[in-house]
Image (cartoon, rainbow, N blue to C red):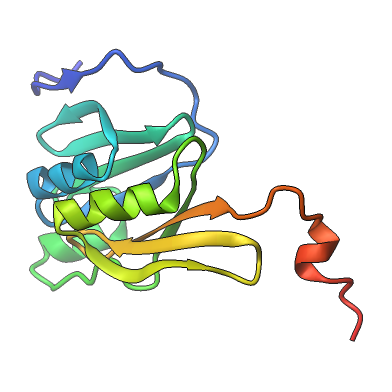
Length: 157
């Protein structure tokens, strides 16, 4: 076991079928940003933090010093690392509205990429960017009674 200090929460530990890992430039700033939006810390170490929005909606934040990707090795070699470009993480909301998240984002001073809006695929969405430019899309179903065929059409043209 590593001698690095870490903080752990009372969150349930389970195998995560899928999660996102993001390399961040300033771990404490990023952790604070995610907490302001409603994420909880599952555990924190000096070089990484495991955050959870809801069960199975986990994000692992790592610093440039964690050798897990080519981006990490590029930053260790002194090359500038572009973060966030082309990456969007979708979170489907249950028990809260997109507008609730938008209010928290505004209070936290988050960068809003797209204000809450309804889509043609029957969702209401808000897109915010974290301090490294990663986009998070908070999405909720508008009308749960609409069928899949009604939302996307028959596919015939």
